[in-house]
Length: 402
Image (cartoon, rainbow, N blue to C red):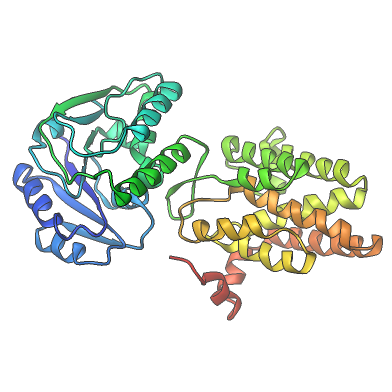
């Protein structure tokens, strides 16, 4: 317990409570640094937290989990104490806990709905980690350095606590619950409270599914399966190959690296996606078009919204479906979800399949030649770097990002 302690507080529009919470934490644990991750507040939360003595990170509005992950990256090595911005009570017993992950259970229930989100969270933790949790959603948590390494970056949004418990248990760490006389602002059984709990339930479910880490270090839900579900059997099969790569890929990048290493999920995609295209179109040109288009969109998926914008532009020309892309674009741009290889490969496959229907045989081979050239170029240089230094295209690429 002689390791340094940092307190992380994620806050959004908490000007009524944040100064009191920071002051309470600094008095209770004077040797600890308090970092407040301001998640795009529209009020004076950041100013009041700073005046109370906290180090403040001013962030775009992305979600609780993303804010905590940003704060953890800014924190020095050592133990962590996570607290909600409206917390009341003595947290010193929690900070002094010997467990790897210690979760505060409130001695008295304050507010709340009908317990649906909490029951779902308990069952998911039990199913995925074999652990019965009394307070699966509690935001008051103490983490040892080992738990910090196992759990961060945490899952996005309000699902961060549930996935944190699952990750700690899966790593064989000690997970404890400690009953404390703590309090916070209650959420009632009104419209605002039910909307909050609906978002919480959504985030919890997503947090327990496939996750990926984006370029910024945020751990986000992989939603490529939605593209597969909306695109028909062939697209679903290609999305499944991409999801396998998301979940089990190694450090290899590019065709050459995958071919050198042989048995990789990249090689599985290299063979499997054209094979699915061949079966779906019954043409060699169709298999090649689907495989090359899937790879190209995947190469573009390096920044939020980039692959979806490229898909939408091409879809208007090829008369490919745009509904699922339009629905996913705001979440991708705001870094609340990721396409992953599953989603980007599936979108590319949709373009390839529609190209087969719209192009003549000669047109298909011209398109194959162009896509092959872009693939070779992508192996040698960075499309992202070219996009970011090209006026006009760079502006369009950044449009809508948080």
